[in-house]
Length: 315
Ligand SMILES: NC(=O)c1ccc[n+]([C@@H]2O[C@H](COP(=O)([O-])OP(=O)(O)OC[C@H]3O[C@@H](n4cnc5c(N)ncnc54)[C@H](OP(=O)(O)O)[C@@H]3O)[C@@H](O)[C@H]2O)c1
Image 1 (tube, protein in one colour):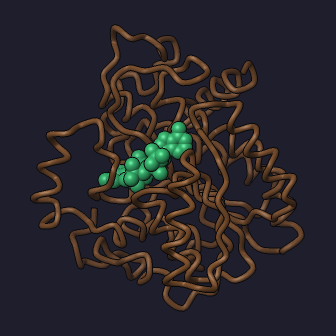
Image 2: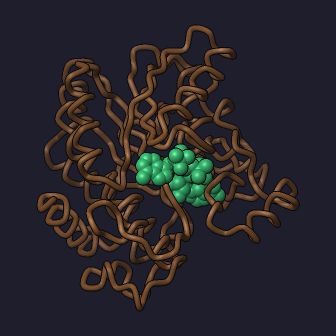
């Protein structure tokens, strides 16, 4: 990570905010989906994209919470174009319904921000009986992206503007299980470790973007796919870890990023002209970063793609 205030090649640093990295960028005419837009980084990402003129569709599992966020943003930015739609990433039926409703709306789609996430949960299964962190953080987004890809391709062709897919990963991807992805033991409760499972899901976010980027390049599509680490920020993500949450709330302001700083890399990768044509990369502090060797493993990325396709096609 770039030390706070030390600028990387992009000209931005860990202390840059989402407003800093999008200063002067006109997002008018673009439409974006932001998943998990009802809390933390998703709220600030929605606010700043809307501030730059982007039409944002907040994809949230709690629609009332989403509507409150929308109202708060509208008080600050009266002209903001924001919609709220229901999406529960831990249910493939909900993901399919969201995608179908989105297609029926005839909205275009330039930007897909796969932001929602859960961290360090006790062992639980999703609606489709798949370990919950892998199901929510990776599989739900994998299915959502696949279902919306045709809409993104049409939009890119018709608007002649590059589409961008942005996966929120984490430096936590370095602390996955030893084998990276536990293909044969994805639902093994006895070997479950809440942090390694989070790491596994965040490794999957990077591998997903990497494999998707190479497929889109092969097709010659003007759509990029990248992943990123937003930094360490106090949000609701620690909700399953009361003790760490309390400590973070007390001392976090001295050494963690603020939420406006935490949303910077997402907004940079989504909107900045410097990122045009850049695909399959992992960003950190609004600069290209260097993920783990597992995250760069093309064979692992391909295997995860096939595995995810099998799991999502069968449900
Ligand atoms: N904060 C950090 O330090 C940090 C560090 C590295 C990476 N990240 C990544 O950044 C992303 C955003 O996290 P955050 O810090 O903003 O956390 P957050 O405040 O907890 O927000 C997470 C969002 O995801 C939503 N979500 C959870 N499960 C969902 C589901 N099944 N379907 C749809 N939405 C769901 C939550 O909705 P509800 O409010 O309804 O639960 C919430 O809106 C995550 O992918 C996380 O892994 C964060």
